[in-house]
Length: 501
Image (cartoon, rainbow, N blue to C red; front, side, top):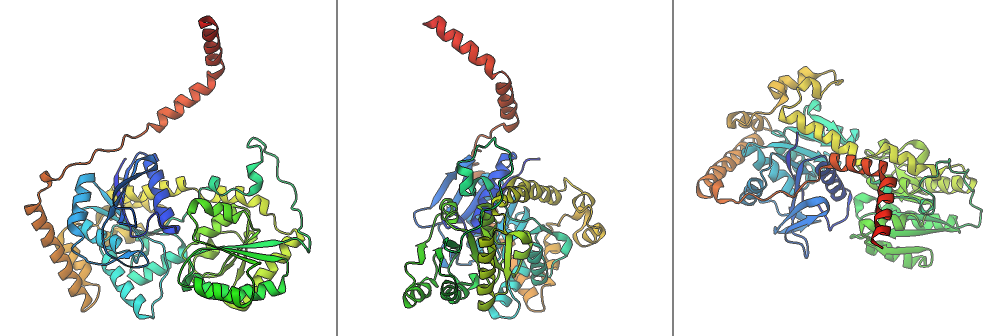
């Protein structure tokens, strides 16, 4: 069943990142499966208004004030008129928000429930419970997710974190991981290999003691990405291993500290700083190395390490968050998020490569079998079917062993009620004082919606024309017929050409 879907998030291209790539790839695959998808984000430098990307993917760049790390200023109610206009123009049925810190995402879910639309939230990050910022974020998330239809997390660790932060029923949270386009992250050896050659790669060639090993780091240079650990570890790694060099790509507030460390230790000839790189250039940077170092302090999934493994790099990463779930043990060398352990783990990885103990030439095909955006789109589509009532709660949660729990807490067939009194009951349970404040916000949002319906009627909003969709099934059958009759067609064309002569 095709759906009209709107993805809401502050984070999207041209800014690079895992969330941005996830939204684009998921949207593209959903369009391939016959759905209509639009993306709504804030305006970026040089990008405002409406843009069309590949495959007819429409992006709305809304001009909103950005306060920190590409996050728009939270206004709660002022976004509602624009939101309503877009939703009505595009005839949206499902609102899918991404990111706990995205104001567009959280406000869109609130307004969508007020308008009677189905909602899905995808969490891409991990947060703590002790500091003031996490407490406020978790309270806000609990408010928004009290009335969401379903939640998706990118790893099982992320699911546990989100369930605890927002006090959710675990049955309403699904785990759907990120993926990569493996064809875009091929090792160098694949560029010259015959695509029809199916013989297994030969045994690895050990690196000699004097051969140079390049360690690649591609990351935003922020504290949570472990940049401080990286800065402390680089001089020690290079001092211990004379035939090792670093290539570091990325930007952020910690870039100055990294540059100062390199200058202080006179490592300019062994550490290359590339600055920010575009996502389509990531593969070209990765294939220059043999090891990928990922010293993150917190990570829900870590798409970049999957991309690195697909490029044939041996991954050294910290054992934090959902990272241990991402790749099998033979592709990774784990370390504690400590300077000494990162130095030791990197040393072990260098030794294994020099001894030929790691079959990195096999990584690409293994990653290709593990992760697929088509599979992610199919599983997300199943979530849409579940919240729309196409699937019963028993079919949706087959194998979970607790379908009754879902139906008891979510109503018949597991579908949320849009009735205002039912919504207020859910918000009221968010806290002694916070519950009353949340109910007040919902009432104001509902009154604003009534006023908009009166003074800006739907009949005055033009319906946008849909991008013409390809009939993929018909094209596939046509291609198969052409391949079968290709030789005959060629003979007919050549004979006709001779007659014309």
